[in-house]
Image (cartoon, rainbow, N blue to C red; front, side, top):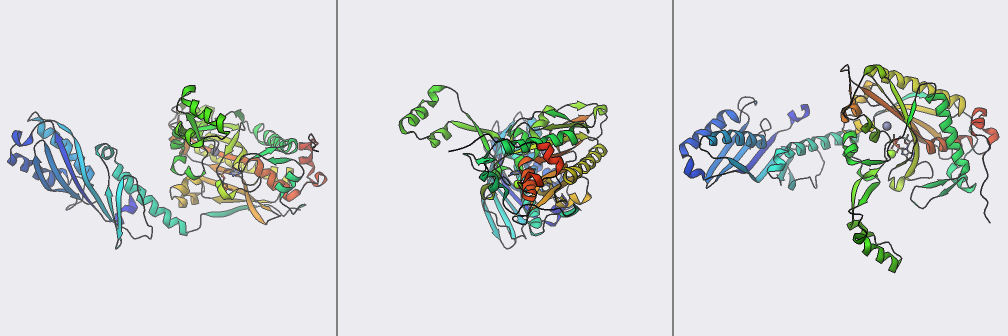
Length: 505
Ligand code: ATP
Ligand code: ZN
Ligand code: MG
């Protein structure tokens, strides 16, 4: 932990080791003094530079307890010292036929240098936070179980992450132009969502950021999919799969989304029981009032995960814990089996930013070289599609992938191996740029997270590309408009006649 070196830390821990019998009767005070002196001289200094480590500064025997006060620096954190002591004391007591029953943590204070403006209000397992004179003092609220789980270390790591994040916040995210298409003729200068709605191609659905796609817009989506099939999936050897659209927390823990997805997730709950009696009160309430009693429902359901956010994470369960022979690589699959859901809050705008959208997810895996090479091949094919079939104006930019930004590792993407290319196009009606798809090389992130290995022992890598059908539509219609005579010939043919099904009085 390199950046930790600059930070000074002090730990003060008051804890008791509870034993199975009376210590005052079984052990002499001389023996105990000798034991503590040994710990202070050797056990609690092990691994620390000379003069550093932990120290028992006071101790006492009260009936069946050894009461301890331990202070330390960051080299042997006091909670590690306590765990070492517990082990050693257990061995020591063995001779006296007494065992250790448990630990009681009374006070645990951590003081550290704090030279950022970041104000902390609340931290998990911390009952009070004091911030003064460039020092941060945490009063922990932990027990034996949390201590064994190294929660104090995780809290310190969390603070490091927060400090890193603050550093990156000031700087603009890595963004580097990779490619810019030629200028293209625009045939429209209005908001395509409004025009589609006016023509009855789409209608607002009941949910926020949700539309019902009429026969015309659906036909456009399907034409995009056919282009992907003809230009990418068939020639490049892809097979179709069906990925789950409900995602459990275990998947998001493994994919890393559990570190930050909360403000944008659509949460999914199941009933605590399907016993009709358990639900009778809710049913009766509805029948009597015609109101759905949300608070009564909330008491009877529990969250089990969320709706598909990024498409590929739940598919990795297919490979989880498996080893594959190298000769089946590279593997190329895609999924177009359902919706993605994100709570976009105030950001929703027409079909450009939806809470429910449709995306074709393209997923490939192989050795590092294969994955990078295939990413290049995809990029070439996309350029062909945008130039020759859709005839749009777009650009490609190298950006920090979400999982690196999340961990404050934005700098790493400068290596240009693991990272994301965003495809952006201008919307003539607003002059704004819209990201309409991306191509990502994710390194060994997913195989690691889901424990997938290669027979040869070589690292398995993967990449993915998400084609947002609404975003492709928004970009195409915003630039090329609704007069199909002005559409590029190849695309007009791919779409065919736009069906007119509904009429309203
Ligand atoms: P943005 O910066 O516009 O929010 P993002 O970086 O969140 O996009 P990704 O997570 O990279 O998007 O998702 C991949 C693709 O999914 C996007 O390129 C886009 O095509 C599509 N997409 C993402 N969010 C939405 C949305 N809210 N509505 C429609 N399509 C979306
Ligand atoms: Zn993906
Ligand atoms: Mg987004």
